[in-house]
Image (tube, rainbow, N blue to C red; front, side):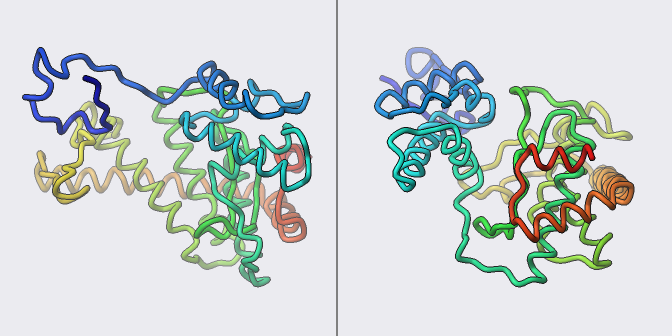
Length: 301
């Protein structure tokens, strides 16, 4: 008998004792070679153009599951069909990556001029900080066309798969996440609710640095959160503290220090590149979307 679960930690010991489900096979996310093979399997019954490079697509889809890759090819086929093309080209495949990873663009959702300006500044802030501080990721696209609940997006991806991250790389992610909020404060002198998701991401990474990875400055080599949530009680309600109130306060101070220092770094870097911020702001307002090559040309100029 074969069974599958994404929560092996909550299985009854009677199920996994010797003689029952005693052999485990962990299926993780596919690496580059596996992604290329999966793409080839799902492209067998689809007509690909000569310029369709599945290895290049595999490199640009780190973190995609097998289902995501199948969906990517289906979306690319739909995009080609809508343009009356008989084959799927690289253009459709790349566009499908954004659609699967980020969602469909809501071109019918028209932003006001003020919202466009705010979104352009916000996304330009993310992009500049990714370019300046990230040792892993490169910007693929900046857009102020609404997607889902977001007014726009900045897409960036690593050149290769990464399985381990240093504290410095995690701090880089926090600085990039805070880039939109920092850019809004620099340009407009006030903040909006548009950075709420970015703040949740930055806070989560900062807290994990301290409580899950043992990378705090004053609290080292101690883990306070094993990362397992009680599925029957609720994600947060099932936790029981295994540390004192004094330690909890110290954790809060560590997390706040990381966030404050990262935000200060974000503002400093953006102030040093204020001309690039203004240029990207203007280009996004007029063009709504900037691709990788155009963005890098602006930053190199």
